[in-house]
Length: 330
Image (tube, rainbow, N blue to C red):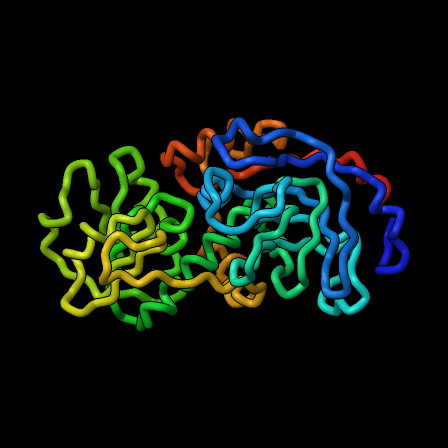
């Protein structure tokens, strides 16, 4: 079943499997249910999801009313999949293309009711990019929100080639990409990152020039001062002490724990992925997926339970997805 707008009204009557919640609360409010397969609007793609990644924002939205939600809500921002339908004004993609991206534009008043923990989703074509051929669906799904967050922090700080950076939380989904971007994309002169004892070698493998084991070393004991402190865990009230005088401090949590720290707004678009595509293709920047991943689509509650411990190394990924309608689309 390959179609454009005007050929697909019957799809509205078809149902797919999704994870959804109808009230705020712990992970147990998530239920596996049926949900209508959406129809793409003029500027949208209909994508069969092959892999998705979980982000802390997904469970924060579920736990309490951070932004307005229309229940039921299917959580999820990051995905990679195959285009199976498109609106009539879509020009950059064709049916059969493999794409990835963050489908949620957080600059709008509401998040989409249908997130990425679904067999099929719709997304504006400007929000996604073609998946590099040498990157798996699981790897591609792990990248969007983390990459967009990491890059936005460097932009907000006005980071310049040759400067030094101190990264708090180097083993996480965002921190692991901040290290690689600092070394490979932004030309940092020296990169230091913090992590726990068991993850020191992993963080070194990402390209950090120096790794600080936060279980053994306090910020106050670090003699070097840095041109940028990039805090990915919300500890800027303490980590600021390693910044040079007047140096920018980025804190990706909201609100930042240090009044001096800057919080960068997330720009959601597919163009950012096109800029880093060469680095993904030549392997200079790699996706970092937690060793416990991927979790199967039917193990979403277990995946959230693991993510919410705060101990993940890289991204928590969901794959494979069910394909109950695959023969109808491809």
